[in-house]
Figure 1: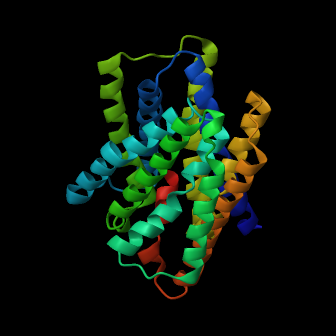
Figure 2: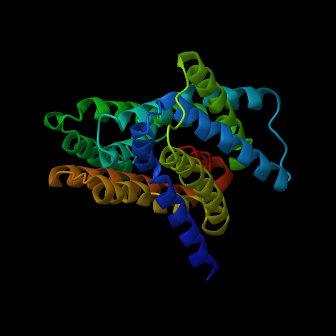
Length: 304
């Protein structure tokens, strides 16, 4: 029963993360700009994460680790989140969500050259599936090329962010890292928003959509992911998180009438299939190495 509850928590987390692009469409329709949206999202979420940090009696990161986390949030996470939220202006929410899931493949490629990770047959197959999937998914004739390229770039930046944070994440908990990264991203987006002129919601519906991004797309998925992670473990949690783009695709079809071409859906299946193989590889690797050594990437699952 406890394991089933953990699975349910991770499913709720993934589904909640999947609403981000949906709420993004509504806040943009209400006149908000990307900088203001992300400023409100991260600054308020950081405040909430600080409360969780205190309740869990965890200390705030210090020294070199703090500086590195700030750098990760102010540079890598800012770039990834900005490109993702901008991409949904030019491409369908479902397509953007699917393409972001190319990041495990980018992590694999970078790990070979930077972390000297060994190449396995399973990972090569996963990479091939991802490449085929991205080729099928990107539709230049559908007016989605700019958005698709932004989503792919967001996935690439996210993978670099993960590789760079490999050592840092070994020394802090998911709550500690999320608090600092959200806060530093919020500060950067706050400066950008007020420098370029902040555009807050113009109506009650706009504020409700913004609250949806903060509560449903950020706070709830972070809290449920943390709770579920402690019950079923990081690898199982990562596998279940593939529910996220599926939820985005279904909600976009229901609310906006977005219909992805069958070939795009097949491409998305290849991408998620590649992601699944990567996760299977983690399961086998965990049997040979300490969990602490490999847990860093799953901690990044909180940072959408």
